[in-house]
Length: 335
Image (cartoon, rainbow, N blue to C red):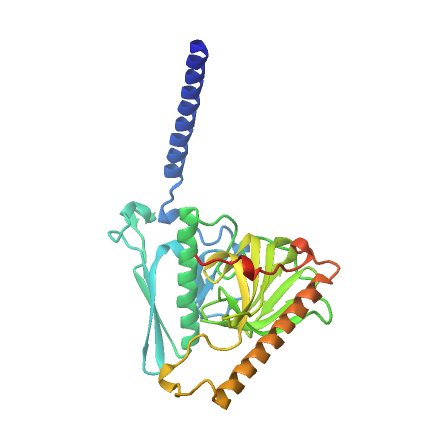
């Protein structure tokens, strides 16, 4: 027995030694792979240069991680890692966009920059003026999104080829159908883009859901849904919720999320007490208001339930259990 323990101990020590040696080699490879600024290229060849850009206009290429600026009538690309910051300000009828680049001594050494005839070459800043401030606003916003993507990619927080505003994985195209079941004027959590509330319509097609607003749309395939829950408006609740739990997270806005909710509110959950009038339990106006709220609850619950049943009747629907689950109120507990 003692000999077996000694052999087992020697075996485990050898496994630990191999594991730590592999970890040290991996750390060394990461250090070796660190690039200098002069080694980053916006485009590897002229064939990758975009051809659909407007002349004499600052643009951002998300795929190439670069910003293109007009110089002497030509669009010159700079890799996003060369840019330190971008600022925008207005002066009268003109808007100004200032691009600040990394320079030696500002977090970067002179060895990071290319040398021509023995002299270090670098750009300090560029300033552009325009009367169309919308383009400069889009450039500043796109730069922040791309800069965040690059930082998250360096930290290893991104697992797929995701870009700002795209899904975090490849999914099949939505197969649309005529007379698709639809719920209108819903809100979505988390929100899409920078808006505080995303209001739109939810449609159920052959292989997935589509939620569309005036400017955005998001597709959720049935195969990517691990659980679907319909929560009606009952008791003291004033919200009707459709909850989808995804197998693979979706990138919505700037964050990845597995849980997506579509909901509508029967009435606002916050009441302004300063506008509340003194009344009694026998006030006919209050009684009528309570009756209207109860009728609205019942009507919206019926509309959502019919939508869930129609989704279950779609022949190609692959939701778990062929439909939506419903919570059992008798089993709930406060937490």
